[in-house]
Picture (cartoon, helix red, strand yellow):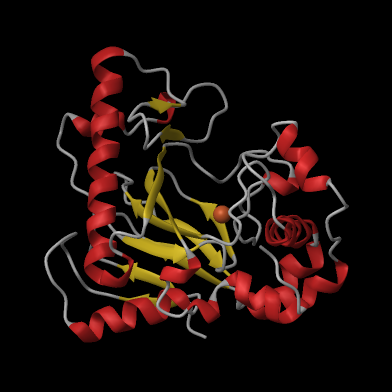
Length: 292
Ligand SMILES: [Fe+2]
């Protein structure tokens, strides 16, 4: 499987040919990365001063915009500067939404806009514990935020001002990965999900699906042999390019890069063009169990 599907558009909104829409939906849902080599995000002279690693506070990697409140955390900015950075993130979120609606009209109205992040810190050369190290191949799954099978769709734009690419590695298809790891995974203990939720460790109940996805995330990262030997290809996303993928399905590792914007969306499996290809349906077929 080719990891990338390249689409040469330069605008975040407008119209695209029906063939391109069909191609975009098919590539995304089959676990490929949609790549827009010439789709950058415009920032004016005054906004470009925010391209500084010093912006993030302490050891935070990201500055995050909460879609419900419109306010951000993770920077030391305040007053007018904070408001201006939030305006950039809002504009990016709106562009990202328009792009996906244009490409996959079937998602329009059903996509839930989640957090928007600004990533001003260089990825390479930092220290992380293996489970937190996103330079290792993984699928996204978050301990405190169960999805119950809902999809995690993410859009990234490289806004590096110094010509530096953002470098990823993309791995094998989800079903092969899951098939290799499933026999090693532990199932939930009785009352485990309820206890985690009552203790406030998870926002809502962790479903059996979330339990499996978390373990796939952790066990995959902790398996040094897998990291070395698994089929994978390296991809450099240059400045002023954009890419979109289902990060709960595409095995990905972010190796290096500095200054990117990212928008996360969630989508109910029922609103996919072909739900059969979602991780929850794949895992349910492999385990012969209902998982959420
Ligand atoms: Fe990730």
